[in-house]
Length: 354
Image 1 (cartoon, helix red, strand yellow):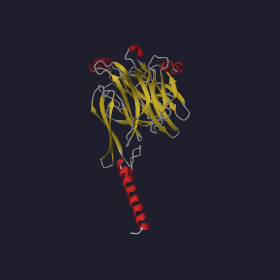
Image 2 (tube, one colour; image 1 turned 30 degrees about the vertical axis):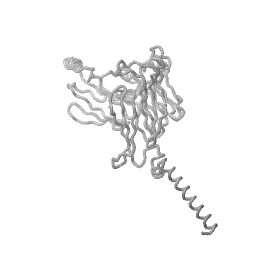
Image 3 (cartoon, rainbow, N blue to C red; image 1 turned 90 degrees about the horizontal axis):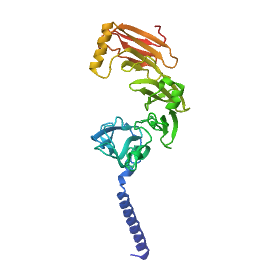
C-alpha cells in the first residue's frame, strides 16, 4: 500500500472513530430524545389529558399526575408530596402546567408548625423533568415558635385559563392588609388588590370574607368574579376586569337569608332566591322551622333581582309545600328555569312582565 493511500485510510478510520465516540455520547443523553415530540414540550399536545390521583391520604400525602393520549395510553407521569390531601383545593391542572401545593414541617400529630415549616404554591410543566417554580408562599415559620408564624396569603387559589394570573386572599379577615389580590404568574408580583376596607367604605353591607372567585371570559374581556361571604350568606359580588383593572362591588338583597334556595346568573349580577329557609344546618332544626311555617300558613315567594340596579320582580307566590324546591336553573344570563309545587316547569326571561 502506498504512503498516500495509507494516509487516506488512517484519516477515514479516525473519522469513523470520532463518529462512534459522538454516537456513544449522544446515546448517554438518550438518542431517542431527538425523536420524542414531547421532550421539550410543556403544554398538553395532540388531545392529551392530565389527571390527578391521591395515592396516600394524610398530612402530608402523596399524589400523582398522569398525562394520557386520546387512546388512554400513559404518556407521562409525576409523583408529588403535598402538605395535606384533606385540603379542599390543593391543585389545578391546566393546559400548560400543574399548579399544586408544596410544603414541609407541618407536624402530623398536632397540626402545628415545626421549625422550617412552609406552605406554598408551585408550578410544574408537563412532559419534562423539572424541580418546579415556587409562585406563592402562603405561610412559613422558620423557628417553629408560634410568635414567628407568618401568613402572607390564604391557601385557596384560582388560575385563569391563559395561565397568566392567580387570584388569592392576602392576609386574613380582620388584618389591616386583608384583600382580594391578583398576582402575575411570570413576575410573581401582585398586580391588583381590593382591600376589605375599600369595599366597606363603598358598600358597608358587603363586609365579610373574600372568595378567590372564578375566571370568566366574555366578549369584552376577561373577568374575575368573586363572592364575599358573611358565614353562609353572600353579602356581595365583586367583578374585576383584567385588561383595565376596573372593579365593581354589587351587594346582595338585604332580605337574602342563609339557607334559602338561590341561584346566580352565569355572569351578570342577577340573583333568583326564595324567602323560606330550606336548610338550617341540621335536619331536626330545619323540620322544626318548616313545621312552624306550615302551621302559620306561610307562603313562599320566588324573586329575581338585578344587583346592579336593585330592580326586583316577584315571579311567584305559592303555597308552602314540605320538601318542595324550585330547582332554580339559569339557562343564560337572561333566562331562569324553575319548578312549581305542582311539577310544572316554567321559564322566566328578562323583559317578561311580573
